[in-house]
Image 1 (cartoon, helix red, strand yellow):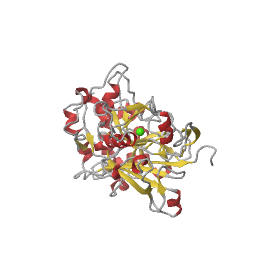
Image 2: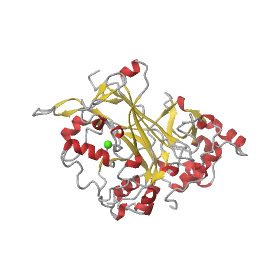
Image 3: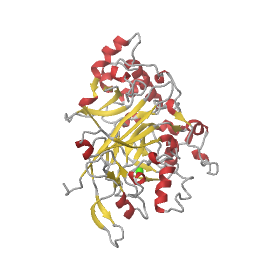
Image 4: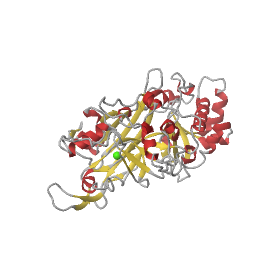
Length: 449
Ligand code: CA
């Protein structure tokens, strides 16, 4: 594996454009500099899912392009790995093949080249309109892990529980995480049923069983693992990013009342594993190269990361300047014809632990990470009030209800509420690239409709 970091190259050229006109519109999430991967099928067709790359408002079917013989060398190896109905085989390959496929797709879809006419003839039959498609969970996720990498989130939550001692002493040494549940990771747009569970009402001695009354979302970013490591092997920090295929948006739905009653002594369980929504497009680390920044600046009296989680590349550009937003659309807003209302804004660069640190730490005991595994960041909160990445923080455990444009208030989510996560990067001299949306609407608990 030769590539361990991505330099900025011609595929990041901010002036580049595509002959797929919708990709060139200002504010488009999927310009030619992005080229994120996903899995699709025609709505209602029940056909086998296929691997595609988003370009403007269309998707390029990679296997169909390969049938036309447009790939050679390492790009062809990568394209062959796109013949399944999930991204796992592509993720298993590694940066050299990923990068070769990206470079060739950039060529095929680019405008203003001598070969443009040929390229259009070759691949335009392989374009399908996104509007006609159902977008699926992009990989067969073997294992899903959720971290707790935002010091602002950890401090806010800690302050609610332990006002005098919000942050536990291990936080600044060890990335805290838990094993989530892969079977209930769902595609954007899948309705989320309010879970039933045990909760103990305030002041009561014994718990009751029924619908959660404190349902929440969590704004997170997920990393899909590439080649990964064998059992008993580790992933050194300086090559960790070669083991990350790309990033997506994640909503880690959480039942706070269930969580509060069950979390001691072993941590989250049924409060978290009823649904986790992922966005359909995986933005590759190579596409993110122009938006790399130094990692979160630790306070001078904070400990340095231990050597296995440190390193020059991490110090230079371990962070990613990824803007994140949470929007809500309630039943009443929908009835009044209103659009979604923004609840918060934060940024991935404010995480205390970077993606590379999470991956290296996860494998540091010899735990094997496999292609298609999902490693999520934990709630991405920022330093300010409008950067709080979940309702628990925004409404401060229900004590400061959030007021919506309809006059409605929210302490936690109501049935019919739809949560939309969005993410994008921009940098002077480079294109704006977006992550698309991660959507989910709360539907009533079983037996309540
Ligand atoms: Ca979480």
